[in-house]
Image (cartoon, rainbow, N blue to C red; front, side, top):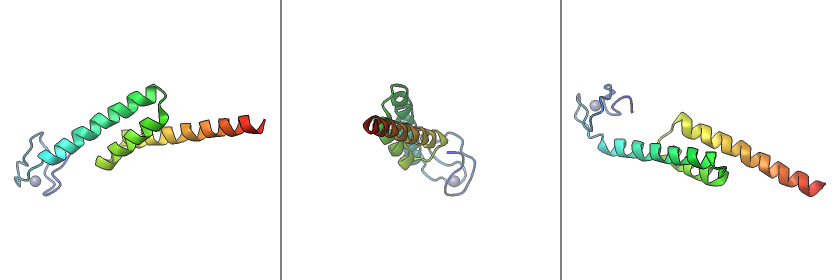
Length: 93
Ligand SMILES: [Zn+2]
């Protein structure tokens, strides 16, 4: 989170906005859960677990839209299509 969603004040790593007093703790918790899910998705990606990596990245993106979750989704999408193509090519031989 870069700015308070209520008043747009710059976020200063505090659970309460210094300007408007909005409670940001729930948002911070969601953001940190999304970050943990992103890390798990990247680990699964490294292990070649495409379907599970994609499932976890979708959960992360549902919580908090980030370029990393989007990249994992894009990569798993391409890998899953490539593996489907390989299966089809084997069947057609
Ligand atoms: Zn604020």
